Length: 279
View 1 (cartoon, rainbow, N blue to C red):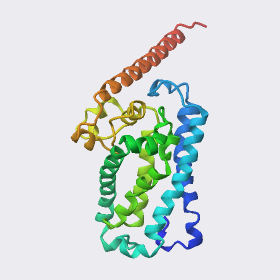
View 2: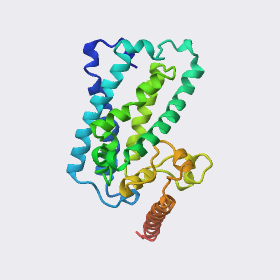
View 3: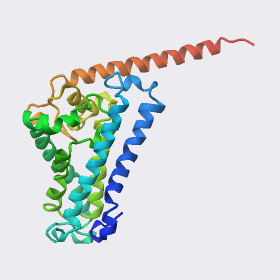
View 4: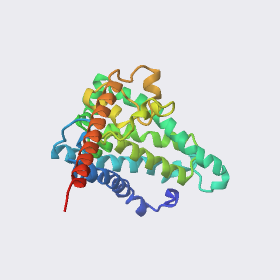
């Protein structure tokens, strides 16, 4: 764990590389599994039944690298300059107690989800969409590499959650690190392009409030609705959860069920054939 408040100017120089390195690691693992190693075997879980072009991956990675630099600069402004004194960032876990340290992590996600929803809807205003957000939506069929693929202006707005949290919530390095890690993981999952949730998750009293890769993939494919990041709270409250979301979920799980049934039948046939062999 790094205490960013004690970084020297030379160490801050490496922060963009750290942020980009984490992005590459968290994107590369699911990409290699779903888009390379198990590409054919897991195709039935692919939401859109085709794959992006190599040029899409290149664009997404290039703009994600630039986003990493912008995220680092915003974090440095908050914690590496005299502004640090005005934040609520603290390093002694006993100052607020371990109960607060644990509670602060889900609170950051709830605040970020509200921030992201309204900022995201703002980005869909026709003027801002054409000039800024359109770049992210060039990934009509997103891959994990699209997680940070933002126009520089949008990257600044995305990074705005950092000062908002640091200046309003007491955050320990552990909780701050947990927040940025969960943010990246959920961004990668949202752009994965594969359905991983069990069908029951969508009707579970708690699970129905979670956002899914299906929800966000529909947003990229259809361009409107499903604006949330971690949860569907704001989409449900303001009527922006797409009406065809559950239809897409049903379609996906019908395909998944059919594939599993086919695999089970093939396995049973092979077992029966093997039992009939005589020597």
